[in-house]
Image 1 (cartoon, one colour):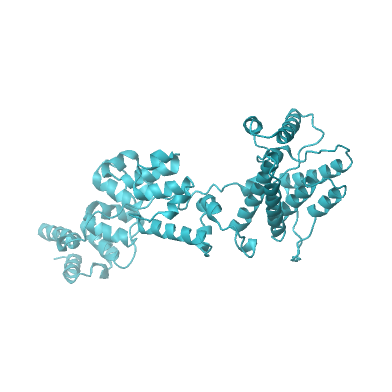
Image 2 (cartoon, helix red, strand yellow):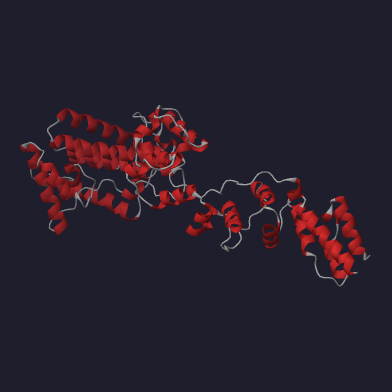
Length: 439
């Protein structure tokens, strides 16, 4: 018997195939490489190390599925085979790289959960559709639809991860610190709705709180103007105080939020009352320092936000020399809509039918101001608030609880039986016997 055959046979009997220097042995003799032996070596090597990427296809092709599932569970195999239309290959692709599967492979595996995940990421749904979803996706869809009542229901039949999310959201609503939730920007829209009314000790603790405070301040301003249109002075004053408080807190946050706070305080000063001094007060608010005295004074935005900032300063100077008894600082906010809202006229038509006479006069004045601005005949552009709208929009996060990434298909095989565990060794033994018989 050739020495290399003897050595391999001895190593097979001992169960130590990787103790041999096979590369040197095969170069020294004129013999084709033994495929089954190499697979046996690599299968044994996977128990303590990784196998090169180019040698994994043979393992996926030859080893029993249950054995492969053990290695996949331990993250020892990373190669996803090319699709070939067979259930075995589709199963391995789903276990290793679920994102690459096409619809026909999902059907071949009858993998409903991944079908729902893809629909969930790519489609909008109505509350009626959501009621037919499986429990996990129904819960996540209701979060996306901002259905706050989902937290008041027991998390029945939810997977462990969604149960933990349900409990964490409830705790956050009660004021407990759940910092890990803030890192998931797909949840910010829902967190905004359930965040306790009291602001944290410092808005700079996390970007979410700054974002939340700016949006809450802008909403309070819009609602204050709506209340004024309806003649509800008490609600108007209360909301204006809330907006002022948030703007003052934002002034203490370095960066863009500082200037948004200053800008909002200037707007509130201009929009409140008719004192001649309000113009000079508004200018001071625009450039006010933070009380905490940072080492470096926050600089205004660059680009378009900075231009808005400077335009607002110029508008204050223009308003100061005008003699009109009533001045429209921002007609969009006066109507109670976001600055620059393209649907403002639809809202105005619906709103004016519900307003008392005084409110209708104010709404019509705002409508006229917007139309003049849109036609390019206004003396000046409206006071811009916020300065940088893109920073305060709902984040378009690509991954997170409400935009889940694909998860590997759960294992569908049992633990390997003894004959499956020995399959690679048995194949290598048959191959060696054939080599010996051929000598």
